[in-house]
Length: 227
Image (cartoon, one colour):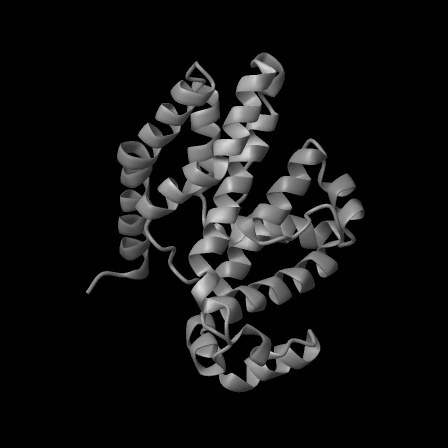
């Protein structure tokens, strides 16, 4: 039996293969048809984002204190698995790697009602399409000043169709346990804030509301290094 590391590696390899062989040509064709040019940076930026774990798609602001951001992460993680599993608490507990009591405690803490998610499973593909569409549109924002305005508008209008094509090719994401998702969240959170403060640990600790010693420990535990 494969270890978790081997499984993760295999899933990442498959995702990268799909991005290279299936998704990249979709983006290139769309740019050629609607922009009149192929901008390699646009394709690279989109595929780089799509290659990351889907946790980054949760609406969590990293420009807030750590305790607040972590609480918001837990709430949005719970909302995500409830939405993807039609509000089924037992399924959510199994995916999250916790017991049902923990799920019920979090539901109470965040004032979430699983009944509100009963009909949302059917909308999962549409939700994924909207997220990819958002990635396409935000990426194009960085380059639109270098492109013809009418062509940019044409590409924006085509973004929903491009996202549908991409979703058809992309494999479903692994559903992360709460602890694994939390590790990814912390890595992205601390990395983002350290980079925004030019890796000044004291300044970063102060801006996110934790002790400098705590941040040093997090950097070591997570294995963060300056790029």
